[in-house]
Length: 98
Image (cartoon, rainbow, N blue to C red):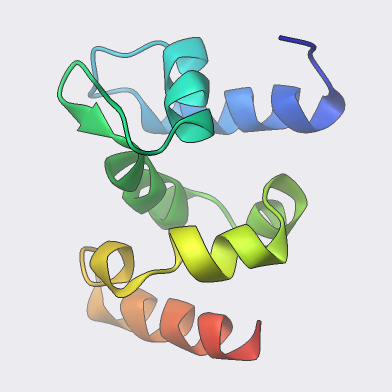
C-alpha cells in the first residue's frame, strides 16, 4: 500500500484509538478498506465509533470523503454507540449538513 500523507495521518489516528485492541494500525486500515470484514473480533463499525470519539471533525473531513462520512461512518448504527449523548447529537447534526 502506498503511503500518502492522508494515509499516514489516518494511521496516526488509528494508533491512538487502538490502545485497547489487539489490532495493529495497518490491520485496522485494511479493515477500513474492506468494511464488511472482521479482524480479531473488531469490525469497521467498531473502529468508526473509536475514531468519532477521538478525532476532531476537521480531521475526519481530511481523512474521509464527505459521501463516506454520510453514508458509511455517520450511520445510526455507529452514532447511537457514541458516548456521551451530546456527541451523538453533534454527529447527527453534522450528518444532516453533509
